[in-house]
Image 1 (cartoon, rainbow, N blue to C red):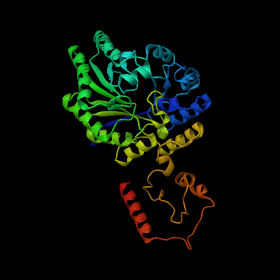
Image 2: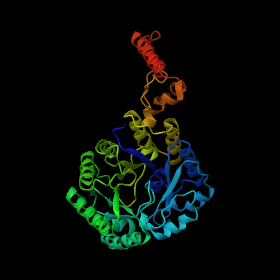
Image 3: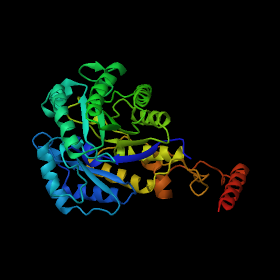
Image 4: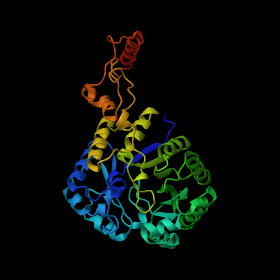
Length: 391
């Protein structure tokens, strides 16, 4: 039995990733990327957001994109929703989009459609992002809870935005977090609706592994019945993947954790102050880590790397991830590097892990004779023996 929680993953390169890029990216290129993502084994892809093109011009093509898009069987496609108007626009494309029945159900990316209340910890960011104060959101909670009760809903989700800190007002500690989660939980409890999920969104990259661990432990201790967590972690300060690992170590096999990230690690909100430097957890790096610690992903990492390389051609610059540059760990003999590999100096030459010898054609070979190693021979034999016994 796994010691880790069940892991679900949402790739957001089409939404969080592209919304911070140049507006010159064509619909054809977006379709190429979306189609390629569907062939990787990823189970959940966010296709974009139905928002005003005046404020997020990169999403002006959403209708054309959805009209031309050919979904892949077995993949959940969702969209980021900020208001009822966006939901109404998106409904004409459902299916293939999986949508919540109303804005009472959050953004529609979680594994279960649960009525959701959430508190935006940073009032400044909320005003910049959606032209509302964070207390406006609090005022909407009683209506969300009342409608859930009228529908006969039995379970609900609570959440926080800008969970661990703000570029405008500083750090938010555990006491503040729990205060606002408690207020939400109390409303649901008074309505007789059980809170089973908690969403923690971090748009301004204030997450650190110790803080993620602290918050998750506090929530699990206070409300053991909460067994589903959604973590949206940005990466401007390099903490997203280590914070995700902290969550995996903190939660148990009885829990489900949903992570958001993006191919290439690109992403960012134009209202958070960090621009393209914000980034997200790179999908390829996260999947490589999961496999390395024994969590099966079902994804084809080679195809995800193809997506990263395609993305870099589309956006015109190198993305933030590592696995697409150096390759996965070569754990089996058929993946080990050639012993007479020449000097490898550039990023392009390092792509030999996938492209073979053509990546280093013309490089310097200083070896006087073919390199031989008894150690390699013995380890190859040992690996073949282990593989034979396993079969």
